[in-house]
Picture (cartoon, rainbow, N blue to C red):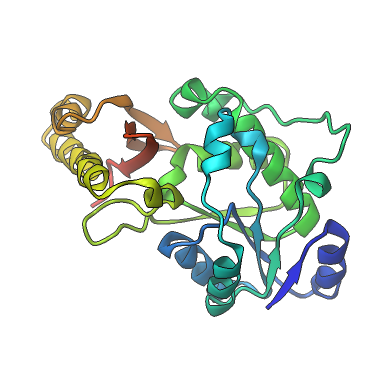
Length: 265
């Protein structure tokens, strides 16, 4: 695996693959876990070369404390990426991605409205902008995202459609720990007691889906199963034609999101 620190360096490395190859991109903010590994392996199975970006994007954080606390361990990430079949790891600086005077942003409406869009103003602007920058830098044919960030996936798909990008967005199912908690880089910030409380989130999703299948109120069932965890929202949303039950909640000082497609068997 080769690491690139600048846009120019990565473009030079990828130039030989511009014809006759299928370039796959996995955009990430690092702190790799099993969910990232699933994305890398999905890309490895269908693409050559595989590019992973490692960039903690400051423009998608509304809270400076959340940005400062975001876990970072680049040496570990490098090892995991290499072991998972990544060919090129792109780890640019903030100045390279957002140089002084940067003033162009991608504002997506539609899929970005409501849920995370309400609770994290400006978040999807930052996500869409950095993803479009990565798409234009890497010029992949395929990009891989996780189902856990289902609204983000819908936002990226809408941007790709609306801007006529020649790019296939593929979604990898949410990876969960043995106890059912969705893998997230933020999970490391949970104490043992907080992690136990956080298990109410996947239980609530399961209760909501069971109610939905019986023709009952999925949101009410999920709320009842949250067991003292106060959510930012519990809602059913239609993402790319799939009814999805989504939950966001704070457990201690850590905000977690999770979802489950209601039409999944």
